[in-house]
Length: 246
Length: 255
Image 1 (cartoon, rainbow over the protein chains, first blue to last red):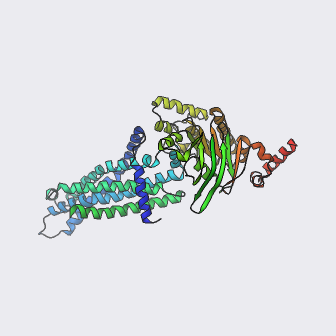
Image 2 (spheres, each protein chain N blue to C red):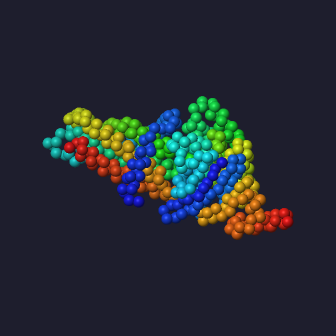
Image 3 (tube, helix red, strand yellow):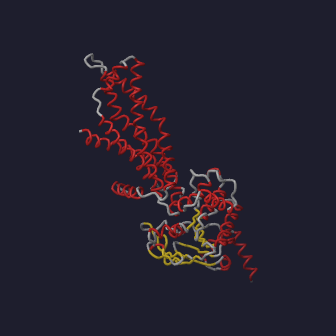
């Protein structure tokens, strides 16, 4: 099947996904379950990575800016910009594409190969709407919080690195954070997050839903889903940056 | 009653069903038998609407399934119970949640009413005290019972079973067969079973359809299958020495 066919099939899938849920109470139950599974259970890894990467960004910036003509506050400024613009929305989304994407593909793919999706269809349930819509809403609603948390922890990690290593002072770092603060950058970051969250939920769902074969096929589909989600995030990141920041 | 007329279904260049016509009656267990690749599963999946026929009609009590409106289709789906080969229980849900699922999706009943209905269905399949267990914690036979309970919880008019006793020991297989037969009689359901199991054919086959290469090669009752001289049926059904001897004894007895 070529890329055009896959793209068409993906959009046809979305048409089925975005239909009114058949039962509100069943849908809300599924939504809260997915927020827990896809969102809350990703908190730990995002917090851990954000904190240390924030520290590394500050450390690298400090080590590379050794000219006496460059003020130390630039370290805070550079760390803030790197974390808000790229690290939190893009890097964290790629991490989530790996963690959450493989989970989504394997769980839906397992349902396909064990005929659970057929069982839903036989009952007269729109299986795409029932399985995928809660995942899409869970990621789109929850990931902005996750990314904001990543920003806060990344920036805090940078500050703590300076304080602990003595490479720059905490005061200079905070001055850098406050320098030329543009709220639009947060909007830009959130727009990216929402679009990436949509990819993280829908692309792996597509690969899981249309899997054919057995457990090996599900494994291969998971890998494919992570690769394609990452590719789409990287491409979308380029175009969004071009559109929103230039 | 389900009436199938000249049913055709293929995938790409491969024609799987090549014009099957038959009738399934309420209160009777009809069995579809045939070798692997004969088209049994495709036939069953076409009957329940998972495949769309290329040609021919399937009529459910006079209603032609390919002409259903969306609302009629939804209504018809609720009249169907299906037991899949691997049970197809939702593995993240408990036994109770699995059986309650169709009720939650299609009724406005209060939780207590739904729970009563779930317990009734689970009692009917002789499965008590397992409500809070997950499917992975159950044996194959118990999973099949849960699947049957889920299939009958909405009071279906039509029950379809795809190899309901595959992977079960002979004793449990007979229990599952008998359970399906009892439920069919009790609720006057039109039951269609896909099977490889010759015990099922002899025990509960009120009507047997033998498929070969996508065509109906033979049709009759479990008594008639002993007497038939249809070569394909004899080769398939009496391929084991045990069944050969049973047949010879039967034929001797009726002479």
